[in-house]
Length: 208
Image 1: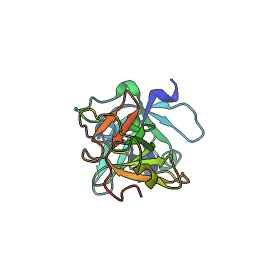
Image 2: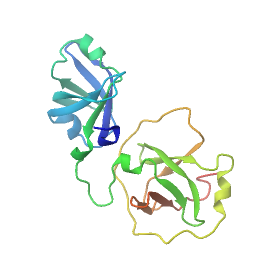
Image 3: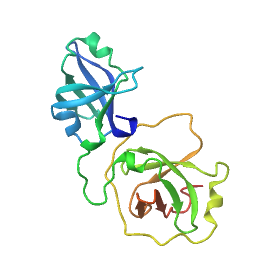
């Protein structure tokens, strides 16, 4: 399977206790990924292809946003420590069904972001940040002066409103200048996956 055929659901941050359990930071908003026993796939540091691993059980650490998982064959702290920074995956075919107006994180990454009023291209979605309302992190197309995007021709007419329920709280560093756009219906009225774009109606000052 190629890399595009996997969905990253989390990464291992530390060992837990002495019996081989690991702490996992989730990149998925579906708790069953970490609570229900079954096959997952793990990509250890230095490996290019995820390998199958059996999840025996899992539990959420209250207030921490972390899960503690037990894998078959990982029964000592040393073995758990060896999995630190490994990534966990499921196949794309294993996507849970979504409600109307919900999106998978990977479907949003890479979408072009357009300002609806001016028809100008603001940039591209590079990450999703979990907050009170999820935030789209957008790498700016015009790095020097995003305010210049406030002028321009009319944008295409919007399609029906949509909203989202997603979670991917991890950010990367050393990026070009970005802005954070609240992923709420009032500011992001249009998500068009077929055309690969998002239309926004940012309030004054949001992208300056």
